[in-house]
Length: 237
Image (cartoon, rainbow, N blue to C red):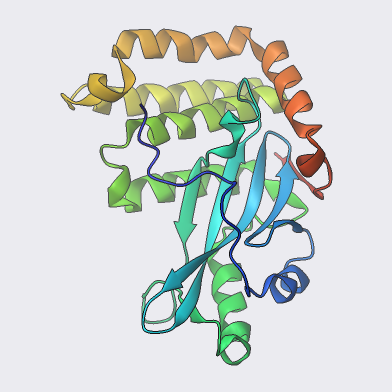
């Protein structure tokens, strides 16, 4: 079983979370659940997840999240590509007391705006998305041995390029994948999670020939009744 290191998009709803305030701050996002504000972004679903954290008091932790729309079933689309924490001016994880939400909300929005790489917009540059994926890959130490998530990043890049039908982007996505896979050779535990590297490489490049099938899956998954209600954001070159 692949270790995604994250939880599925569905699950027990968190109560008393201030989604209304966050929705006003980011109007492109729509309410998906009582702890999620999301939008469709061409090949994926992007948005904010408010994770409930219980310490001495009850806190919530905003996270930037994305979910794939290209999987074979809607159930598989419910596992995130990434979940990225935000940090305050002390570089601590942005945990906000629900009781003191109104006191810290204004500053929290600023942190999220400055650290979301311009991804929570109506129109998003592909370069911003790819730069964020590089940043997340290189700064999140938990990803070091989480090859399934690293592989999802590579698929995200290539499928985005295929969606936009840009030959230059496709070539860059393949070159990036080759650099990443050259590093995977150094990890003896890669095959425990992902199987033979040569097999994975072959299946990755098969995505190029499967473009029409992938686009059809994205369209079908986008028609799911909960996803269809989300507002739309678009990737631009």
